[in-house]
Image (tube, rainbow, N blue to C red; front, side):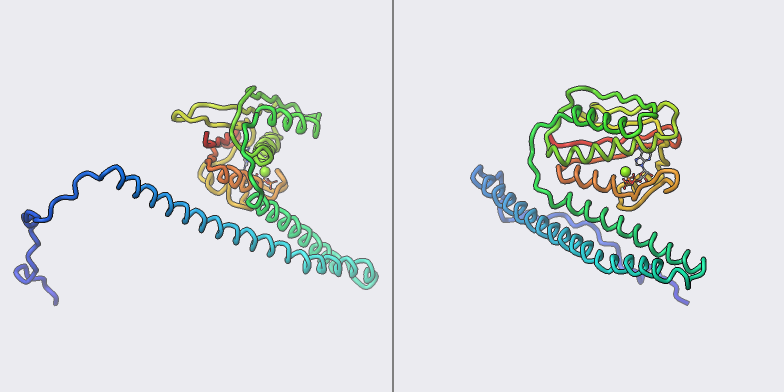
Length: 277
Ligand SMILES: Nc1ncnc2c1ncn2[C@@H]1O[C@H](COP(=O)(O)OP(=O)(O)OP(=O)(O)O)[C@@H](O)[C@H]1O
Ligand SMILES: [Mg+2]
């Protein structure tokens, strides 16, 4: 039996009294020394940023070419299934035809997923042109488009006028299209829905928001929303691939900003994003 005998245990090390060092303490840095260290640090940050950008570009290019290359075999699966259905219909029973229909439906779905991946990858490759952007004007025009897409729906848009942000206009439009498009989609079951866009103060920073009183979601899964192809709602109830918020997050990240989501089931959702000023 292993018994620990107290006197065989090493004695705990006692903190020793510090000997007075003979070397003189470095003392405060001289201004030119601070400037040199700052410049060194900036160089290092620049170098690391360049490495990170190169790695990102490589990853984007990889994602792009893989997605592209997947299209050719998919076209062939779809083409031959179509040919089988057309030319061999008389020798196929209904179960055989049903199987082939399912193969075609699956290949269409995969085609959609590849399109979505390519869209996501393009967002990371686009050159950014920063300027003052009137987000309210963009939100207004998207709201008009959504209303035109289904005039039978009763949806009230409240858009705070003259909300400006510094960013790439095309990319910010894509982000707002996805956020407002989601609000429009997930508020579908409300007889009268409200969607708003505006800005509020969050710890002294401008926080832009898109809010709706639609289906909402369970906060337990809030971190999943921005992951490509992750969805919290059934495809039949609310169609979609689950790529929109991944695109929005990539756009906000490229601007050096942040996005977060808040939702309550059956009460609505709010998406809030910060952009560097
Ligand atoms: N306004 C919202 N209200 C409730 N749930 C939302 C809202 N916006 C997003 N979600 C949830 O987050 C998921 C991911 O959103 P995302 O925009 O990425 O995909 P999608 O709208 O389902 O499909 P896609 O954008 O590709 O057409 C949605 O499926 C839904 O579950
Ligand atoms: Mg969406």
